[in-house]
Image (cartoon, rainbow, N blue to C red; front, side, top):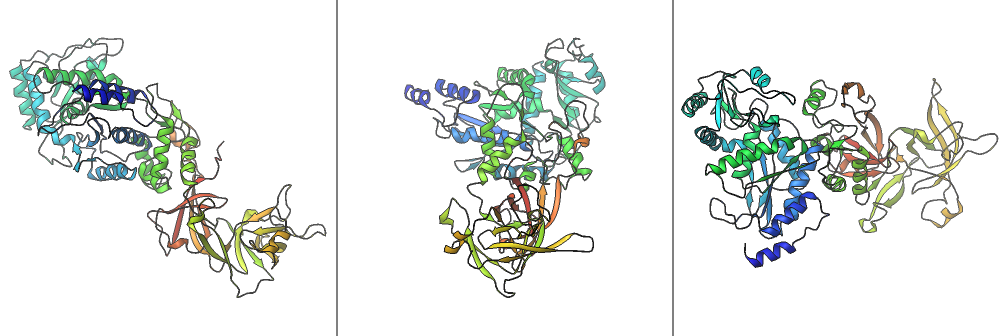
Length: 594
């Protein structure tokens, strides 16, 4: 690296708050560690290359969102650093029995929805571990020829038993001393499909007495006669993650391989494989380095793919995109915004400390903070009770207006109509009011009924109510004061404490409102020996027949609004249409779980 470039690199500082990963990258840039590297075509490589490498065996969840924001975010922030930066999208598709193209498509969609791209300088850096099957096989043969790998014919149970544990050293396989020629012949026969699943595996020859159990001759290839979603039936042996991952990083010239703390014990193996192949002349220094950060654990949620699949298969939720699920497709359908997820990940930061729990309220507050300045306001009555204004003309529709957003006058106003019959919330009326109840109630003890203002409309006074045969209130009666309309001089003559939202029974739109809550009542539903199913919140979904402000059936899916007094809602991205309005509760205005 030239003195000039070294000087400019040492002065580069990322605009974000520092963390241990940024400090490592800043130091590497200052030292020119990855400068002057060339790709296979002789083109200069960026000084920072990260990657996001999920296995396409399920839908991504909120924990993956943190990794996406971290890896793609670092590449974005270091784009202006000397040499530039980029992030690769790579699928670790080495387990054909569990992987599907459906999951590949959903992962790509999730990354893009979160606001990131794997394109750099007009090139899409999307890769698959299966792209490297030929090279992985070639490198395995190189290790066999170097005496660093052997074919083991023990059963899986025998291999597991002989590996030992933390208090017991491993035992060498009786096949460990096969010659390189024997191992090569057997490995090639494995590839040719001459053996059944489980008959043989390929293991690295490291140290069966190593204190790190991961290093006790790990298996790197197994026989699996299974159809692969990309390579079809071309292969019947497949490499394992610990062998594939580090080599894929090296092939793609990854500089900083960032993963969660659960892979910390695997780092020595990551280094061993790359150093062995470097010594064999396959790779050159500097090799990729692995760095671990604390994974995201969110209260009132589970992120185990197995348990999430169980919820779906047992129909305890309405699919992978159920708005109660912590999957990215689920939180998107719930109404979360990409910006709120990025804000959340920024707030919780990046740490190398032991994994900690983040309270769900932190995620929900990030969502509120993102939505508050950009969600237009509207009226919705979720539990409708009819209000009849007896002295209002039957055929009259009084035009009313309100700001689309109180902090954005440039957004203009929304327009709706007040009619003789309107819907109000059932909770806004009581026959016998409790102390401090300032909404509607009928005449009491010779006193007139209570007065309230219909927001952006007139002041009304309750005069009575109707009940059905069961004694349930089915309608409330009131009279309005014609000189009290909001925005007119006469409105100042009326002082009321109650201010009710409402929807015209004539022009309002019927809507299905889905009110979602946390899926679990326990903040740690699957910790210890708990049965997570016992913590399911039976009230986590309510479907209400509601009424919404006129025109809201015409909005596009995923349009977000603040329904005044209730919270933030989104037009369902699947079911909402002009013929049937469907809105989901995204989050309440305040944290109801405190």
